[in-house]
Amino acid sequence: MKCLVTGATGFTGGYLARALLRDGHQVRALVRPGSASAALADAGIEVVEGQLTRADDVAAAARECEQIYHIAAVFRTAGHPDSYYREVNVGGTLNVLEAARRHGCERVVHCSTGGVHGHVANPPADENYPFQPDDIYQRTKLEAEMEVTAASRRGQPVAIFRPGAIYGEGDLRFLKLFRSIQKRQFVMIGTGQTRLHMVHVDDMVQGIMLCGSRPEALGQVFLIAGPEAPTLQEIANVTAGIVGVPPPRLRIPVWPVYSAAWLCEMVCVPLRIDPPLHRRRVGFFTHHREFDIGKARRLLGFAPQVSVRDGIARTVRWYREQGLMSPAP
Image (cartoon, rainbow, N blue to C red; front, top):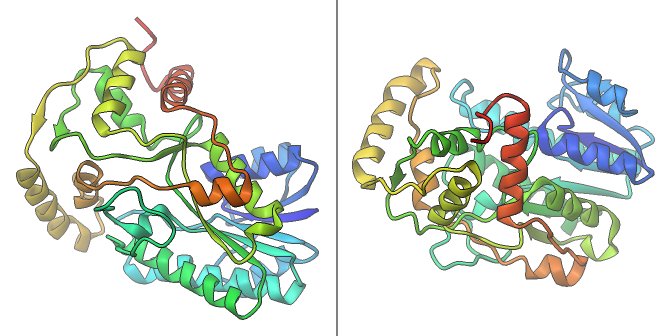
């Protein structure tokens, strides 16, 4: 099968594109002009330059493709106005749906986010849990998901997945956390008892490919996350054990940090400067993000394999190999 992957120069999209290739598919990647795509081409992936926000570019990339895996999105950054998030996350999704219709694609597999549920006050959240997006990224991802859902109701073959917190070898989002624990500089904000449902990229890709291959996925939405949802304190303790330091014990209350984050945003965001402290970073410590993945297990046969301990150990090992963390003592 010939598959188009958007976002293949990113972490999850790159893993997915290579996994599809290993599975015997022909893979094409839509990448922005000037993107670092040589590694994709070297792996045997066809690279097509174009903008997700240009309908003609997306249609050209989708020509002859039987499936589209839409992973690309603009993530959280202070350097873009809200309109840019909407243009890419919503407008780009509409372009993907239109290109799929034009070329008669067998299905579109759309990446949403577990973040559309916001703070899960009554965990775990399943696919029917209320929507409570916290920021412009989550709001526009929800808007995009609603467009895909509307297309599904009109008869277009689609599958939607909402990932948990993706991590693994090649990703840098957890580097600052792991490194601060190793340096014994980590400070817990709040109680540390909120839960973060992580998913190693290997398990994530398994779930995405099941959304692309199983007939039961069509017209459905799935939460995809790992086999366990540890507390932040458990994550910190596991990481400390792996890097060879005592578990972090220092805690500070939430409200002064949140107030400082609000002030930073008020000053920095209008100047398009990335604030040194965001309210969403404080939300990392205060929001429950635990999901019920039973639907994906039942309908897709999704079976995540990578435990939090093994996944963190593998990620730390990769960070060390790249010189991003100090070697083991």
